[in-house]
Image 1 (cartoon, rainbow, N blue to C red):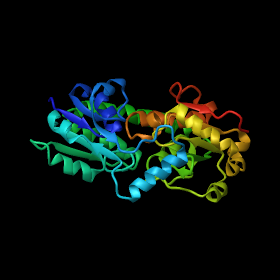
Image 2 (tube, helix red, strand yellow; image 1 turned 90 degrees about the vertical axis):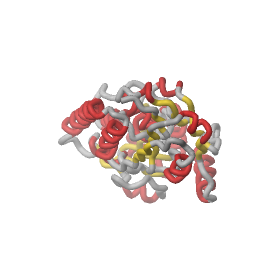
Image 3 (cartoon, rainbow, N blue to C red; image 1 turned 120 degrees about the horizontal axis):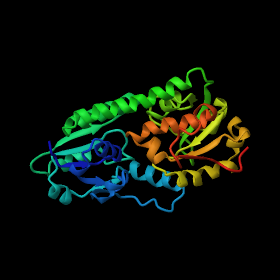
Image 4 (cartoon, rainbow, N blue to C red; image 1 turned 180 degrees about the vertical axis):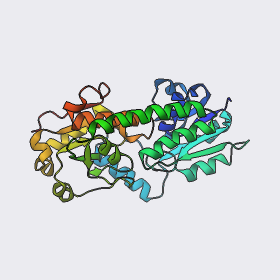
Length: 307
């Protein structure tokens, strides 16, 4: 079964390539950079807000103000989309900050003739992410490949879960944004739990802005800096801010030197297969003796000058 696919979600793009459907992908978003082959596809979605060179606080401010005004954060090239004649469009309904919103996609689809199928992904848990692999496989005719991929991902989860059994639950504050501080949400607290930790965020719920007083009451033993969509160098740059932040210096994590930066873009923010590798990253951070060497290379780093 050969279909023409436009992926408006980086995680869906990764799934498609892992299912062997990469040659069927004809359009992607500007953020679809993994695997590298995805960057050869035509880009149909671009951001309306330029954030390059801005600080975390400046980015938070401009995104919040744009969203509050009801203005779109992304624009879809309707002319190009029509020219690509997709049979399937994969979108997401989870977060309008991360991808083109479902409403905007539905409006654009009306301009495409013949009308393509639209699959919307909106996972909130690890189970949802795995189920989305199968949903994508079904819509593009790759069910067998999807089932095999799901089995491999589930095996990795079991490996970590079984090895973490009996280990002390390390209290963890995973930061999805640094300035202002946001806790983790959706699948990330569950990832931390599988890895042998107990995260400040709530499983299945969105990330949210938190007050320093809340974090201090939690008394985190480990702080993981993983700003949404940030690579390891970007996360590390933001994490360095923490060394001069008053509330951070009062945490057990700071005293013990347990402050880390991670490649959030690849292993935590996106709800694709690589997210499962993020559980290995978290496990090695929280329990290095039990999981030494399991994290992918260059997936995390301890923040120097802390502790």
